[in-house]
Image 1 (cartoon, rainbow, N blue to C red):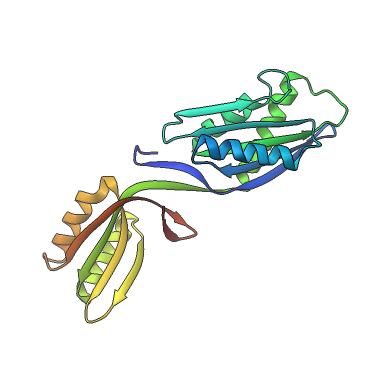
Image 2: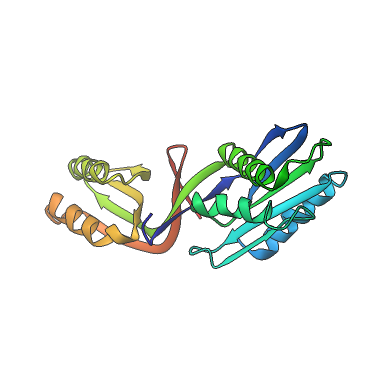
Length: 217
């Protein structure tokens, strides 16, 4: 992962495992701030008010600047920290997870709890939609139809997705370009179209490829 991109949750998910009759229900959500994470955790505690434990973990920031976890009554270090470790190991940013446990009557022991909370967190992530957000710039390119073919080829070579295309007597291409490719793209398009294409850099943004479409954040 480059310094201009990071993995995050686009759409939350949930998963469940059963260990010695104890049910572990994991719910994963995006969380851009500590307030969002806290609101989500409270929401899950209200929803599963009858459960013995609602353990939680979250990580906020492009560099995991803020991390928190809670064992919610489980033995210290057997739930929240193992859950947080999964988020950090998967390098997921701006995300929160709550694992709800309905006790099945059999003690799992320290190692058993750690494994169960980690497995359920992994199951929740597996059912969530994880994307790679990139820092970049919106770019408009005006060109003729011959230049458009060359731009398509240049972008395909570099894995840059075209967001939208306007066709009139000319073609206007709208794209999101990763920040670290800005200079390279400008040079390639200028040279590839012999300077005939008009490039207009717009605002800086974050974007991601979601189901083969570029989404701007």
